Structures are given as C-alpha cells and as structure tokens.
Length: 220
Image: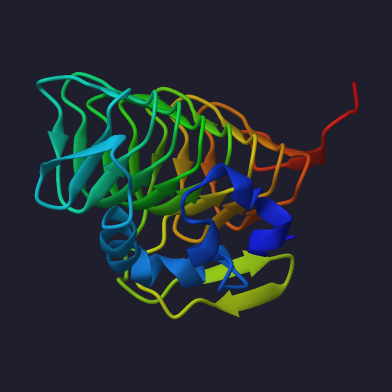
C-alpha cells in the first residue's frame, strides 16, 4: 500500500510521467527540482513565466505579498494567499490552496490539494484532494540528522534520504495542529485526528487517533 500506484491517481498531476518511473513516492524527492525545470520549458501559452523558472497559470490567483521561489509551477485556478512562502522546487497542481503564511519546499501537490492555514510542507508529496488542517506540518529532518527509515508494522524500509516529510495519498485528511514526523506515509482515504504526532505508516481507509491508535474507517 506504500507504492505510488497504491497511493495516487496520476491523472491528477503534471508529474505523472516523472512519478511513473518510481516504485515508492519518496524515491522521487531527489529529482523534483530538475523535473520542474524540464516540465516548465514544455508548458504552453496558458502559463506565464513571471520570473526565471517560475511559471504561473493565467487563471491562478497569487497575492502580491506571496513569494514564489524558483523553480516552481502554479497550476490553473490555484490560489496562493497572503504571505505564502514557496521556497522553490514546488509543483502545485490545479485548484489548490496555498494559504496564509504557508511554506512549501521540494514538494509535489496534486490537484485540489489544500494547505490553507499556517502549514509547513517540505520534502513531501500530497495526493489528490488531500487536506492539511490549520497548523499541521511535516517534520522533514530527524533530530539526529540521520537517514529516514519508513516503519510499517515490523518492516523497516531504508529510504536513503536525509530529508523526507510525509507522503499523503489521495483524499487524506490531516487534523489541525498535527505533526507528521519524518518518514510518515498515509494511505488513501485515511484521516489523522487533530493534535496528533504521527510516525510510520497509516494504512488506506484508516484513522490515526491522537493517542496513536490506528483503527479502520467504517463504511458509510
């Protein structure tokens, strides 16, 4: 359930061809910058290169106080709000929200992703229609500065990367003021309770409760 095929509908990102090369999503982190630069050169007339290697779709709304660092792509009908800080290496899809004081760095945001209030998202991939509640963040570096390992019920997967925030599958909901620790992987259609401290793998269609318990979601 941790593979790109398991977690994401690639029809909802310009990074479809790039991500298709990999098995696990974290394998794509090292090449996001180069991918954006190459992709930007192929964008049509609907995108404007507002500064070197910063491409913004003509239907996107970018607040004058927002900072867009190179390279980045801002997709159609996306809203980048007051004081958003896009540090660079950010591919933001269509109909996304990058909110007030949100910081993005080395990320892929699929279409319809919402990071609307005081979020930090670094070295992460957020799937279609995923949502990070106010104040929720990805912690992307271990305290000992070591390489990140993904822990999944006794399985320990060496990622080989030092910076790795979170991989959120499609339709993931992260509650307010939660911390997603390095190496967090949340499967499709799963929820994280507010005020949670998450690490490891949350399976598809499960709920991470703020006491650390993980339970299946009930079908409705």
